[in-house]
Length: 125
Image (cartoon, rainbow, N blue to C red; front, side, top):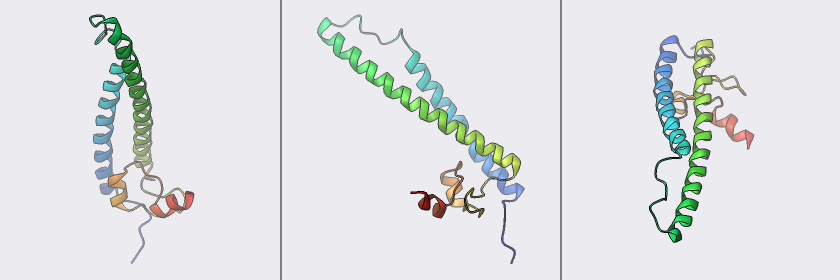
C-alpha cells in the first residue's frame, strides 16, 4: 500500500469549503468588533449622573480595549485561514512543515489552518 504524501484534489476542495466558511464567519466577527471599538457616538454617558459617568467611562474604555485585543486576534486568525487557502492552491495543504507527514483530517477539521502534526507541535514546547 502506497503511503499518501498529499491530500487529493477532492479532499482539498472539502477543506477549502470548510476554510471559506470559517473565514466568512471570522470576517463578520471582526467587522462587528471593529465597529464596536470605533463607535464613538453611541452608548455615551451624557444622560447619567456625574458619579456614575466616570465609572461608566472607565468600563467602556476597558470594554473597548478588550474588543480591540479580540479584533487583533481575529485578524491573525483570518490571516492564518487565508494562508491555508494559499496552501490548498499550492497543493501543500495538510502537510506538516516540520516532519513532511500528512496532518490527520480530524486535526485539520478542528484546526483548519494547522501546519503541524500533534507530534511536531508537542516537540516545540
